[in-house]
Image 1 (tube, helix red, strand yellow):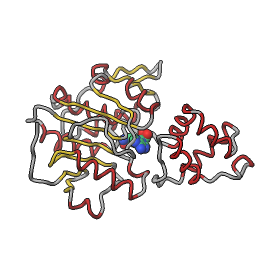
Image 2 (tube, protein in one colour):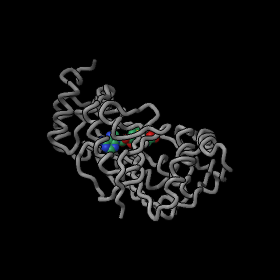
Image 3 (cartoon, helix red, strand yellow):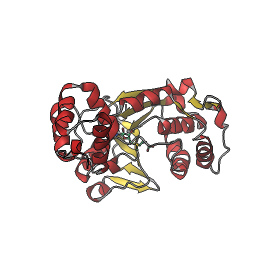
Image 4 (cartoon, rainbow, N blue to C red):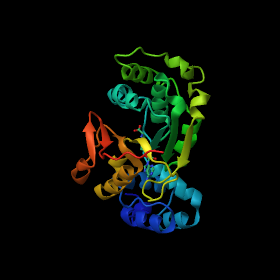
Length: 282
Ligand SMILES: C[S@@+](CC[C@H](N)C(=O)[O-])C[C@H]1O[C@@H](n2cnc3c(N)ncnc32)[C@H](O)[C@@H]1O
């Protein structure tokens, strides 16, 4: 351990961060937060005292800490079998609705959101969808709004996932949704798609929501995995409150509901439906 890290204890630091910023990571379960904060200290040559001082006095530095703590890994059509289920089972059930409300919580750089838009477009119901996408990371949201990604590294995987998500259907043309430029190493979603989504900075730890809508679909994939059980329960309860009865919640492939929530949702393949017979809408 370097001298600069000698007096540092990451749990203590998270309490200080909570006290002097809007962010509360004290119920995160991810032990690698420790490693990531240490990296900031090393990169900027800070000891604990200096880390705390910067945290108390520099809002921009606090945002850097948030970026360092959060994990933004994502991809287009991640886990294609889940998208195939959404295409064939979940979205067709919404086809008759005049309006379809969707929330992507923890949307990262937007690939998950654009995957859904492509499916909605394929089923010709995109014009009826109202789509909110939220994340705690300002930087991730800025990229999500642009809908612009590195092409060369991702190309093969993205095209493979895309094709697998349409398994059993006529596969649309990938290039009708994206402009791809290998020379510039750039993959960009159609502008009418990026303009369709309301990207909003929002912290799931906080109780308040940045919208009044109830939702038909709530995506929160590969986010709860970073939280302790107590925080996971609070957030799932909020999703339950904000879903229409019969509405669908989609978690990550390695996330599942336990205990109490098993009675509040019924599981259908990789997705959860809010159970309840009353359905007052609009
Ligand atoms: C691993 S990414 C998952 C992205 C996408 N949902 C997927 O499955 O591909 C986790 C995202 O959760 C966001 N996140 C972490 N804590 C959050 C919080 N308290 N409120 C909102 N978003 C949060 C991170 O910034 C990150 O973008």
